[in-house]
Image: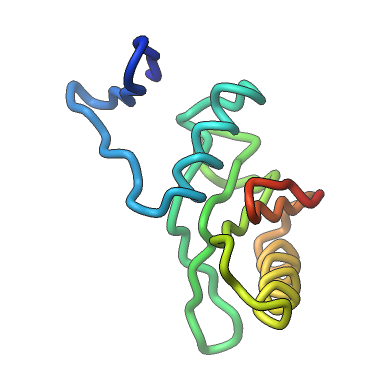
Length: 117
């Protein structure tokens, strides 16, 4: 469960407080999915392993259609502000490849606090 106070945001899970991520962009994206777009926190996974051939990569965030994490809806890639244009292009290619492998219908690139759908 997520609750807001006047000065902080707390995420309560299993009787404890889930720490907000160290990565500011990913933390903001995670909270935006829940607070602004009303996705259920229980259907959002972070740091999801994605198998690409023999390599295992990691998707920043995946939003699922179901509580069992069997039906991916959105693969989200988060990047900080100071990446180069080449890194940005690579990130876009990366998020699309993750979506194909995972079977997600949508991708969401969150960069410089601007969404690219």
